[in-house]
Image 1 (cartoon, chains in turn green, orange):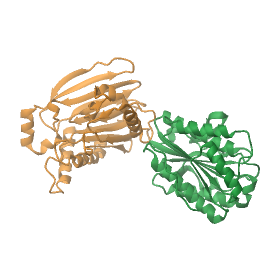
Image 2 (cartoon, rainbow over the protein chains, first blue to last red; image 1 turned 45 degrees about the vertical axis):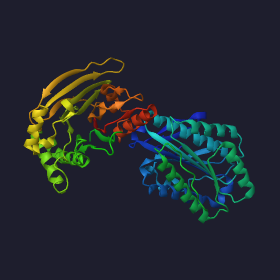
Image 3 (cartoon, rainbow over the protein chains, first blue to last red; image 1 turned 180 degrees about the vertical axis):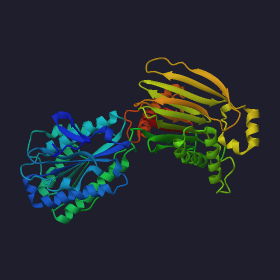
Image 4 (tube, rainbow over the protein chains, first blue to last red; image 1 turned 135 degrees about the vertical axis):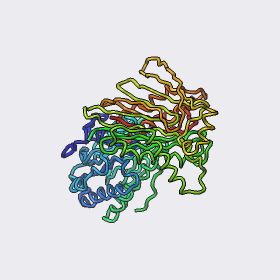
Length: 248
Length: 278
């Protein structure tokens, strides 16, 4: 639930009883949009780099501001630990304040990676369907940032895989969807687990930043914004975006 | 500030190497304009000519909105003269560069919650007005597919030759399109003796109504099996907007063209639209 409902936002329902907020359709002026969701781990284990993660989220948004396609981006941010929390709903970049990311992560708890990914996909698909019904063209990207594997089992791997498959097949609602998993761990064991999870659910791309440092998280912001820009540039081509090759 | 919105759309036809239509739409104060021009394919550089005509007409709109009554022939004279002055900056351009149609719509609040709209056409094209579910559709077609271009005013010999060959004869086809009801088309034949005189429709619009001008490319759509699609079947696609915000016409047309690509529907001629919603 957002802290304060912007008058241009409405509360919508997604599959599996998720609720999310998004810009009202009659507040949208363009003919096409990329729906970008940033899903960030706020479990207890990231407490060592909370500030850097928040800065990376802000920097990613600010980098997207400079894109020639900035007017065609709707960005959402969620955070997850034991559950999933919306930092802000699908908003036009110009409506997102820098202060939306200040202290936005509430650290502590476990890692509901499955639920967070599932929720982002369902919300994206639901909003894309709403927009498609009003003749907007959309594509989507979901970037999931985590330092660990899933350890809350209210949503299964199969459910996440099914949601990804449904989203990828929803050609009438979305031209394409890209899902990127970003590990902020550097731990080879966790990297392997995330690699396996990526394959099991059918995620497009997995990158790991390696040992987490402020510099690496700054690069994370560039990676996220480049991935979003690539997806936005692909809108209207009938194709999904190609995975960004990036060195951390 | 009233809720009027204006938008425009241009798309190259399959049989053209580049688009020779141009359109603009916008607001000036509380009034709105929609303008389009369709260049003559057999004349050179008419893509530039169409743009010059539209911009020249747009320049005249601010004064037109302030005038108690607009003399459209005088407006047309000023427009073509201005476009010619601009074209003369380029010595290599032929004198036929301005061989293009011109359509415009002017929408002004009447002070009582409604809007007075005037649609003018120098040449061929379609005027569509939507009120509720019904669309009043007008298509203007010239005999021999030869519109009486404004540019003929610049050359009396060309104008005379045109009248001797074509006679300034046009058909005005009118129909009211209602969903799930058969439409009938009434055709009247008119003639015009000089190119500055437009076809004019005066329309009262209520909040929620829409008006769109469309170039004659509306009559050049073909199904996947090359069967021509009647213009009156295509007309609703240009005015059935789901949302009237932002680039509402471009959004509608982009959706329509995606559907056409999937269905194998093509259009040979360039097609352009300029729309106003109130």
